[in-house]
Image 1 (cartoon, rainbow, N blue to C red):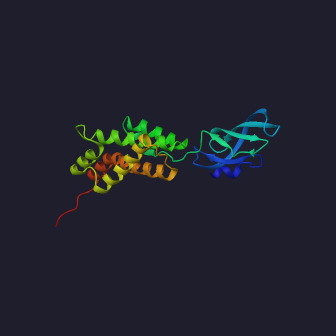
Image 2: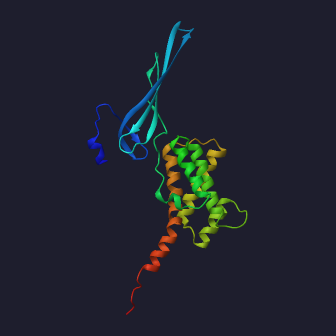
Image 3: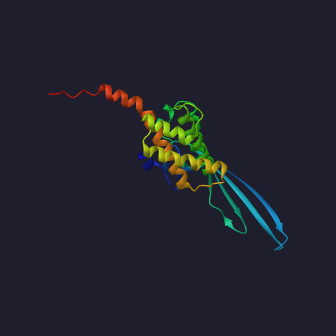
Length: 219
């Protein structure tokens, strides 16, 4: 971010950069415009439309993105849209340490969140939980019974069972009951699955920490 102090901002636009994870100055590298018009029979007037596509490049990291601005003579200019869209939630660094297919599934969930497809994200979270739990239990029991089995084994606490059951049910509601969650609900479900998987990823490191820790000398 110190590089920004040397950037001439007179002809730059300040927008979010997914790579920098912050608002940075972007320079417009290219632009094209599409125009159209239609005749409205009701008002007996001609309505004009315009779509402006601008290629923006971050002046800190160099990443490019597309900005689309739509305008019509009836409603003026709409808020700009960006492609790729701003990150809704940044994937954690430990994501790459997950085994397949958990890593692929979770990566797609982050993409769904970024695209504003929160119901799809919840369905993906449900799939992630199903894969993780089923890989650690035997038989064809339903999800609640599998969670109970993991609690009996000591893999999960009673509070974790409660949280994961609610999260799984939200995903089921999105898939089968027409549930269209708002962003805060989708983020809550994401945090629940992140917390579970992060602990799973940490286990080998904690085992190493335990083996490296000097034992207390008994008197």
